[in-house]
Length: 342
Ligand code: UDP
Ligand code: MG
Image 1: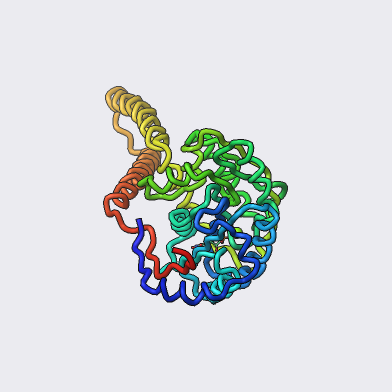
Image 2: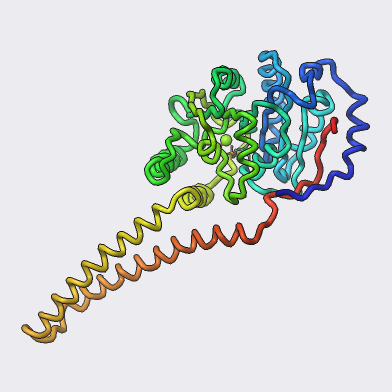
């Protein structure tokens, strides 16, 4: 769902269509290219030139028709200006979606998917952590008939240590709690066939875990190892809080196991407490009242209260998710679509 304001579109079309660069011929069948590459970008100004030049070189090497859909996710730097310069150079290759403000990585990716026209869709990040030169590996797999090709980062992670550990724990828990056997959901260089993208964007799921949704919808899934580089320029947009949130979203969005585990735990605890009450009662009758041991009781009480609080939080996660769906707010607000073709 999106709110669009495309009033200046004709204007833009008029401007850019007169300005065709010879290379733009590489996207021959513009209205229905074979490949669409979707890139969300938030404050990526120093990376745009490197990204676009390397990506175009790789795409031209595939000898397929292509388009690049870049979503400017409310950047506060000059990301958009840079992108528009590239669109001027390659008017038929670039489609640029400009958001009103920052709506987050996954919503940006979602918006890109809603606007692609290709048969095979490739997602990637703007920071060049996954080198675009790895892209042909994905196409080999889609050519073999896979409708979703995921990827995992080869070798040592090129992120901060804590990020590495956080995503290892995340990947482990997800595998066990949600039954989703993906080695690395954080690696965004992925390829999807059109049918998978259609299924994703028709899905009303509010938390847009695109790699995971695609996994659910794919009939033939495979994963390949990708080289992984440090960020080319700039800093990661994600801190610890974001990672924790993502983790909760994923667990509660794709599984009821946390609720069930909690209920089971509640049963075990209740049985233990029942025995404790019997014991205390018998003790009271046969031995008499006790003044000592109060702290032990407090300890047990505190423990149970904290368990109850965790339970309330867990239920809150599910209620919150339902609330978001009921609100039905748009995932993003599009300020303008810079497109040279209708
Ligand atoms: N990104 C975005 N909106 C955001 C945060 C990030 O579009 O609110 C983009 C960002 O420009 C990059 C990708 O999402 O292309 C991944 O972000 P980042 O590299 O900061 O994440 P990390 O690789 O550290 O997980
Ligand atoms: Mg990154």
